Amino acid sequence: MSTPVTPTATGAQGTLGTQGTTLSPTNSGLGQNAFLQLMMDQLKNQDPLNPSNPTQYLSELAQFSQLEQQTNIATSAASTATQASASSALALLGRTVSYTSAGATLSGTVSSVQFGSSGPTLTIGAASGIPLSSVTEAS
Image 1 (cartoon, rainbow, N blue to C red):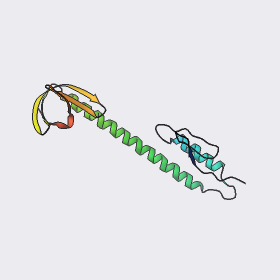
Image 2 (image 1 turned 90 degrees about the horizontal axis):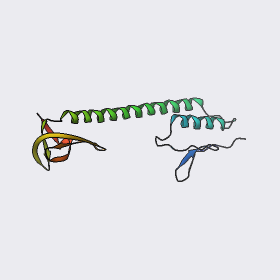
Image 3 (image 1 turned 45 degrees about the horizontal axis):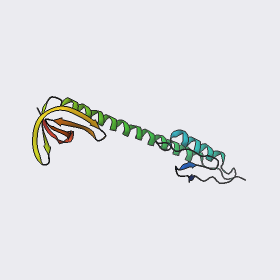
Image 4 (image 1 turned 180 degrees about the horizontal axis):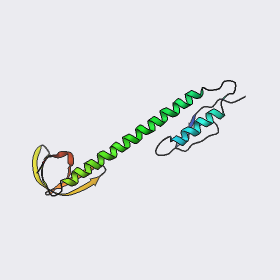
């Protein structure tokens, strides 16, 4: 007689697995290989007198693949947006721009571009750390 398989989560770092299986978490979450390993363990440990529906596993795999592709597309779109923002900031080097700061509209020449975790910032005249979103006009 087979023992029912139940997912378990234990430990400070949170290992995830089924009976007899332990998977270490990764920064990217549950990957495709881990998903397939869990599915195979579930199939191996199922009750032969009460088998699972195999189409359910195929449906779960298809949903997982679709989610993985959507995640890849979102990552690619975010990367493209970051590159476009960097390109826009670099295109302003040496140009005279108008920007808003503390409610006032100021202008000056962009002398440098800095890249940080929150996106590119500009040095305009003597003012540094001006976000690209503050620029209202370029000439």
